[in-house]
Amino acid sequence: LDELSVFFGGKSVASDAKGVRGFKCFAGAEAPANHHSMTTTSVAYSSDRRAFVTAATDGKVLLWKAGKPERVVSEGSSPVWTTAVVGSALVSGSEDGILTVVDLDSSGTKKVISGHLAAVSKWPRTERPSS
Image (cartoon, rainbow, N blue to C red; front, top):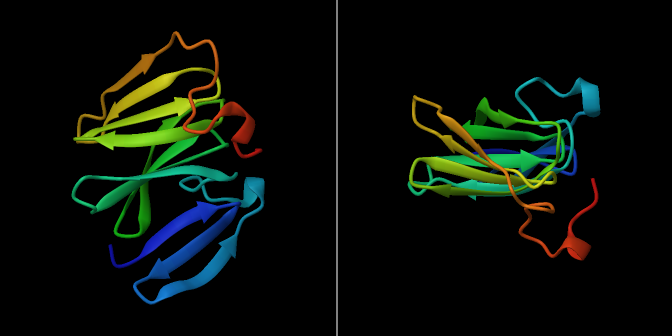
């Protein structure tokens, strides 16, 4: 990717091969609908590195292409702590113990898997970032 725009700690960071170029901050409700309004917790790249997804404590998972958010792939009421892209599928895990699997191709098929008794997270529960 020539340029990436990702939210970290409520800041949109634009970067390229030369390094960080700038910051744009949104305060909660000021964030555009296709951006995160809270802290980004996870970034996962597609296998071809042409796209990536971000997850945040606002419950949104966004698909990014060409350095811009393309669409909200998944949205819930619970913080999303982890993401992975496997083939054309996105898997995300959230605070409420839900795994969500979304087909990133044109179908956008979504499957929700419940059963975890605690948050689905890539961090040990005591080391997870605060929201």
